[in-house]
Image (cartoon, rainbow, N blue to C red):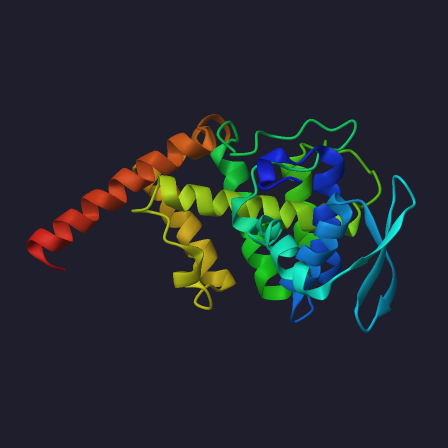
Length: 243
């Protein structure tokens, strides 16, 4: 039984992401996902529900047994990590596509800004075209590639991947990137555009001739480290001298 995201192989990761996609919109999605994940990892099938428990079948041996209801909570809790999506440590691999590194350390800053734009737009609109745009960046799909759209569970994987990375980046650069929950509900398309423009002004020191260099040649972590340092300096000045 895996007990954390890093222990999942690609087949298991795909299955868990598919479960999250299937149940994400249900009120008790965490219970559904963790229960289904436990049955999957244990290679069990529920043959029938009985008053005294579940009649289960082992996929490997074909043997059946009665699963007592009072045992289920502890078993499901053992795979509860599947609902802690912010701790995800790997992404689904797609044959024929060379994905960027999971933590986006080598991603050009301009691509990060595009990702953030697509991500926030998806939160506002729930339009899967936004996730398609993210997927093309994260999996480095060539611009002239007219391949069919990616499956829904892959798009869910993209959403979870980027969400987990945002949590990681907020821990690495806490002065500039505040936790997503504190800013939720205040983001609009206009504020997002204004924020991106402000970031570019900081990084280029107002020199517009350097914008293309920053977008295409400076990696995401280097850019965020500079922005974080600037935010920390601004905070210290405000604390010392006031607004």
